[in-house]
Amino acid sequence: MYAKKLRQNLRKNNKTHRRSKRTMQNKISAAITGVSGYVPEYVLTNEELEKLVETNDEWITSRTGIKERRVLKGEGQGTSVMAAKAVSDLLAKTNTKPEEIDLVICATVTPDYFFPSASNLICKAVGIRETASFDLAAACSGFLNALATGAVFIESGRYKKVIVVGADKMSAIVDYTDRTTCILFGDGAGAVLLEPNDEGVGVQDFILKSDGEGCESLMQKGGGSAYPPTQETIDQKLHYIRQEGQSVFKFAVTRMADISAEIMERNQLTGEDVRFLVPHQANKRIIDATASRMNIGEEKVMLNIQKYGNTTAATIPLCLWDYENQLKKGDNLILAAFGGGFTWASAYVKWAYDPKK
Image (cartoon, rainbow, N blue to C red):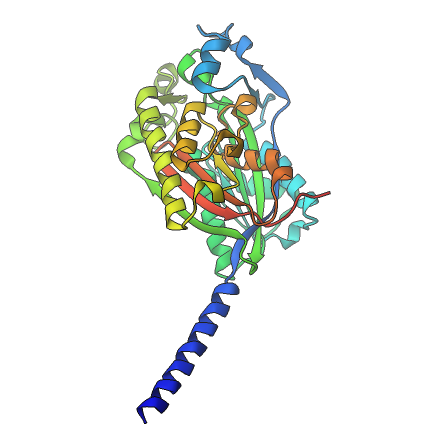
């Protein structure tokens, strides 16, 4: 009697295990099925900045790794202009019709207007109609927060095609008489398409964190409801980005490295398992510290800070765009960022496709 019951329990447990295994295998994840980017034509070099502020190419390069950055010129040209170009190209690359898109999320801290949102303007420009769209603000961590949000919508089964954009026109809020900030930032946009996948590729995990204690270390004080535009706020230059360089650097260098190591440990990954670290492009020294903590060499680090500078929410998708042809299906990527707030985040992504021929 006991033996018969034991066999029944074993069969039941094996059946449950097989069902659980099938469920794990068929789990829906959000796969990146395409990536695109856009940077403005105008190149602002270190040599040109030497004419604006007291600095030089060697000083900028040795401390940041930046050689040049892009600037969007022209009256009435806002962040959505760059983002729309990236999204339009993304739709073309992936053979996706505008009416197929279920949701557009734009991560930015430099929207064209407070409202309507940049995502609304992007949709208008590329012909996406009557579709959900919204902006998300988490500074330099914005793209990873938007990616995580888009992934959850896909995993829920509610949406099938989600576009996630990271875009910023930082030149609009940079004081070009302040050498602590004007050497760092550039303009650009990147976009990815998320679709459901049951083959085990796509967004595997993410960690999002913030700490408002650091809010005054990196901020744009004027322009919001606390300090709306007045002649006084303009005279005090409150509408420009301001940062306490040393405190931001110290916090960033530890938090970005920590959260990258944390997501690797949580997913039992070693440096050998990782194909690329995809870091926010803020400072070469912060990137190096993160790579060191992950125990990976520089050949496994995506880097384009020398070309574009810090494009805030656009840095990570622009890296994916630049390195797309070096990626293969199944490659393990660790995405990591740190930004104002303070905010910091990481994501573990298995790349979903081989290079397009």
